[in-house]
Amino acid sequence: MRISIFGLGYVGCVGAACLAKLGHEVIGVDVNENKVRLINEGKPTIIEEGIAPLCQEAHEKGLMRATTNAKEAVMASDISFIVVGTPSSKEGHLNLSYIYTVAERIGKALKDKDGFHIVAIRSTVLPGTNERVSEILEKESGKKRDTDFAVVSNPEFLREGTSVNDYFNPPLTLVGTNNRRAEECFRELYKDIHAEFVCTDVKVAEIMKYVNNTYHALKIVFGNEVGNICKQLDIDSHKVMEIFCKDRQLNISPYYFKPGFAYGGSCLPKDMKALRTLAHDLYVEVPVIDSIHPSNEHQKDHAVQTILSKGKRKIGILGLSFKSGTDDLRCSPIVDVVERLLGKGCEIRIYDKNVVVSELTGTNKDFIMAKIPHLQHFVTSDLDAVCAGSDLLVVTNKEKEFEHLLSRYPGKIIIDLVRQWREVDYDGYYEGLSWGDINENAAAQKREIDKDFRQTDF
Image (cartoon, rainbow, N blue to C red; front, side, top):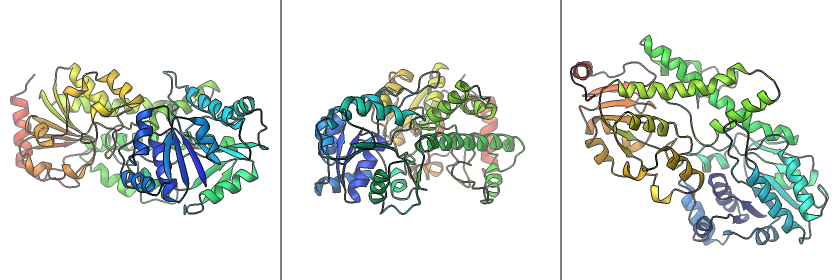
């Protein structure tokens, strides 16, 4: 099939490359000329596991290209995906202006196009957006919905860091439409994706991502609170949660039930907040959902206090993005921790091989520059320099390159936010954020604790 994808960020880039891998002809559309150039050179617009070879292969086969011209893309495709950002306001309401602007551009292009065209909303939007996009398309094109075109809702279920694998192996394929022609087209589009195809009401499809992500956010907070309680009782919280997750009859996924650091990223905070705001607008009380964000903020405070309690000024942060394997800094919880530590006068060094400050763009750049405007002075790709120059190391992401950290840098204070190691025998001080003492080297652990209390840098 011939596909156009409006928006070449995380979801758009992954979708374009994966659809090309399935043999479809794809043309990406973006107002950012740099992203268009990257795609036309066979390069991804993001850092993501497995995405680069897919883009290169699609480029070599002539199955993927990009443009800034909306009409060119619509004329060259049968399905147009809308995959632009939907940022939230301080109150939690979504800014859908990007969605509606793209709809206007597609509508104007459809005015001069013959044949049936399908517009698929891939962005995460609240119920009612599909209806509004349909109205815009009718107004701008002069054509009739479900006769000349159809608008379907096709939410994605991708996790940054594993999005390519998730695209080809989703939990299900969800399409919201009452148009039989559009449904048949999407069944054909996804025929090589081996997952249950679920066609449902448009509004059901629109709200599913918010329900899913709000629940995922809740699971993370729950796991963290269990971990904090277990730590005070000297109980291995990971063993507790491993046993808890053995009950699969109630559809419990073990992915998020892991005591550790706060959640972040571009989806969970925004979508959980949006559902909470929707409930408020409907005068529905949701005390559990209301408590998720404060609990997540408490986990950040817990991390800051744990770090500061060691009395060290020279602090190395190992990982700045919200998740390993990505360069996404939006709502990364460690960014807030770094901001607070800087405010306390700490000397910060940050290692993250995926974050290149000069290449940050869009909302990713806007977010981090508002939090840490001089980020370039703190971030480096030299892991040894950060570790050697710091008295305390904070492990924020699970990276393979951190596996030998304990043996290479004995005597440091290690604060682990993500349970990087299942077992620890460290000649230094090790502490997990939400689990008890697992350092088998008791003498070293006690030595470092005593030294902390005798000498501090503050």
